Image (cartoon, rainbow, N blue to C red; front, side, top):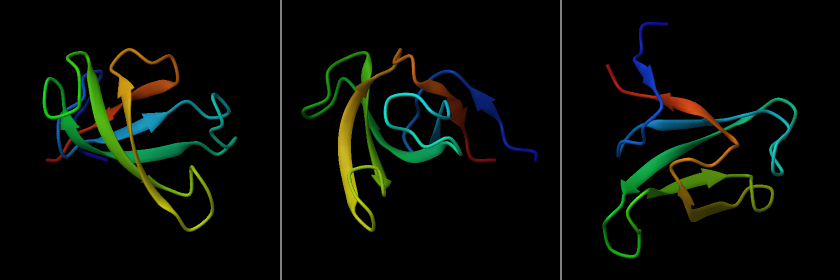
Length: 79
């Protein structure tokens, strides 16, 4: 709907996961890109995300994943 999309993580982007992979529900899952490595605790080629309801209902969690993780469908960037 007018937002740019791509394959690279950028702080502030939304990461979109492939539905049904690696614990993602059949409806899909999205998360917020907090920071991109190399940065504090985030190696090059990875990024930190925040998300809700992945590690348990009504819970916010943070994790670091690889830019090339197979369960990433893509990223949505701000306008």
